[in-house]
Length: 221
Image (cartoon, rainbow, N blue to C red):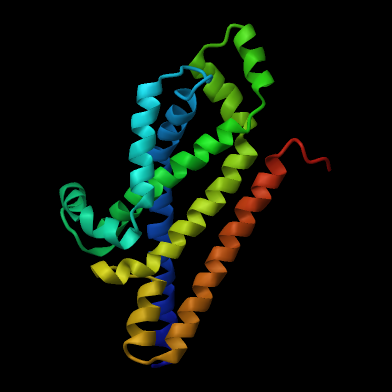
């Protein structure tokens, strides 16, 4: 394989991988954030405790989290078909990733909110703040460092699932490494795609971790 062709394929693979990862992470947070807030807010002793709601949400989240991704991919093909009109390709794979990642994000959001000092919440309540104001102006800002660390974990976890796009005819670095590196015994493509995947993971991890540290008011400069 010519060097120019190799670089072109790696460039397209990197773009496909980033596209799938970023879009999946975005929608996982769109769904997972309100779920995480509800899990936190409806828990015992929280802002608006609702045992039944908390239990039902907790069971749904735990069930989805416990299903292996490859099985979840098979089970949710009708959902992808209904939403994007196909069971195959990157668009469908984004649906599978969102369904798998949203419950994971919800639990991380819940955990981050639980770390906020109860005294801060009580102070806000004593000043007449309602639950919506407490969530938006107290809980989320106070939990921001933990939320950013969680986002780094989420995006790198989702990135780690992207090689499975080959199962549904999608593209990306993982697909290149498997299709060309393994099935066609192209060691150069396999190692190049794998190395580029590692670089993407490290860059995302470092950038988000640096942002988290910078936003943490507890760290003195």
